[in-house]
Figure 1 (cartoon, rainbow, N blue to C red):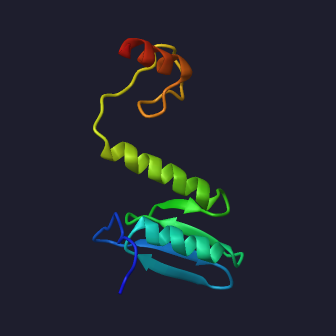
Figure 2 (tube, rainbow, N blue to C red):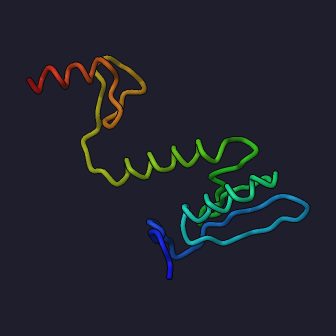
Length: 115
């Protein structure tokens, strides 16, 4: 019996984890969650790992970034794509101010407007 949840994203084509150690091993995955889990397991043994999307583009490489940081960014981007909202334009020209992570001034304006 399986425990836990199944993959939240699957594709007709596979996502591939490329492991670079003494040999070049390729493992096909059915979801990004599966690919992330494989990379995390393999990084413990000191292997360089890459995640390749179904178009053949390298979307992650352990030589350039942390898998934990990449996973956080991937989940945020996935969440943003799944939410239909109007584009937020910050009146204070804060570059990091987006609809789900407002700058301090926009948060204060939102509280003021709700009262």
